Length: 261
Ligand code: FE
Image (cartoon, rainbow, N blue to C red; front, side, top):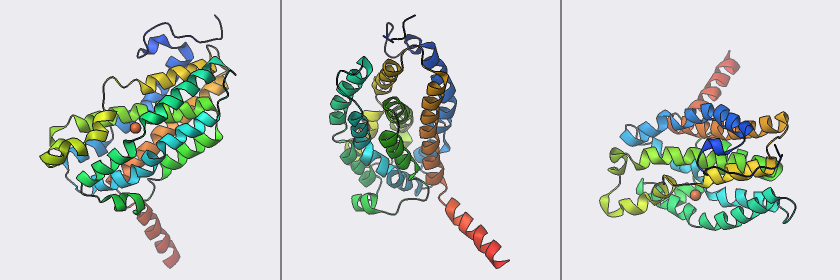
């Protein structure tokens, strides 16, 4: 078997990818499930606590706003003609940074529909801990390999996001929270990211496989898997803090108790 990976089967079928990638995806999916099955999404649909959605739209904003910049950082790592994988990555990133063009604006429209003024999203106090996702994406896209950043950001973030946005977008009780006259505009970001035919995470996986080939070293695979899992964990923290923001406060309280003793 040649070390060079070339996809022969359909883009969106896991069996089209090398065995190491299939195993890696299986291992990471266990962690992704904790994001997609997070209680946050049901709580947003029922709106039982109306402070949750505002916390989420504010907390996720830094990662949303920076998203095309993470891709730009990945693009900076490519050199034309160095490898097929890099050429593929370069072409894909150039095209898809353009696709991200309006997504920050659509996110602000969602926030406004949820009753959060855009100023509050852009300059607001971030719920404690929610910065973890943006920090991690910044770190991996600036300091790690091209394969690692594409895996963590374009495969990891976009893959899980496609799934959770579908939960919200398909929920009638969620849609009903937005006045009908502005519903379409408010939910545009979710509609775009919930699209069933979203091929971005698969395309990212294909590029990662092109970059790494059919027979990468076990340590390289373990590293990329770790990066994908870190993305999911940062997303889960965002979910936790959106549902229950008081964690840091409790640490402070515990500290005060110790100090007083
Ligand atoms: Fe987007």
